[in-house]
Image 1 (spheres, rainbow, N blue to C red):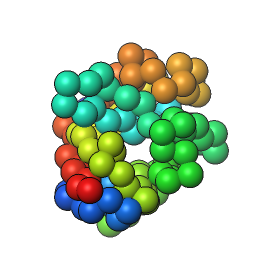
Image 2 (cartoon, helix red, strand yellow):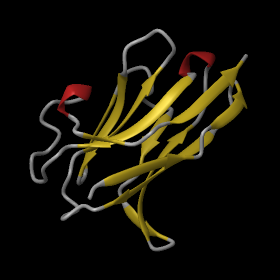
Image 3 (tube, rainbow, N blue to C red):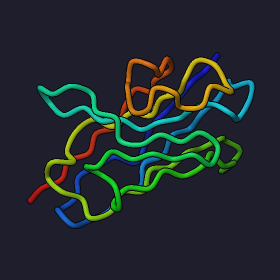
Image 4 (cartoon, rainbow, N blue to C red):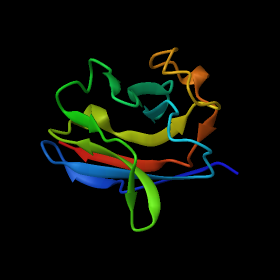
Amino acid sequence: QVQLVESGGGSVQAGGSLRLSCAASGYSHSAYCMGWFRQAPGKEREGLTTRYLGFISYADSVKGRFTISPISRDNGKNTMYLQMNSLKPEDTGMYYCASYRSPFRGCSGGLRHEDFAYWGQGTPVTVSS
């Protein structure tokens, strides 16, 4: 059974940094499209970044500030990270990691959240000015 669990959210002042973690389990292979999304109150879910093997894409809103890591083995768990630097108040929201349902498809849908089948429960990020 696939499971994604995010952690690492919190409150930070503008200009600060956070690193979010996504612990992944139940996958049959490593070649899945993985992504990070966020949803601010009253707004639609926004795709931030995707990674399929060495292929990475970023939304313009986070390019140069956020970095998605490959999945690595960390304390016995397969974990993906989102390093967030130079945070802005508009980065406030619930952050989710997600994956496609099947491997070997690349991230054919780009940053569209509709193409992602498995989701974590989210971790909140608040950036104050």
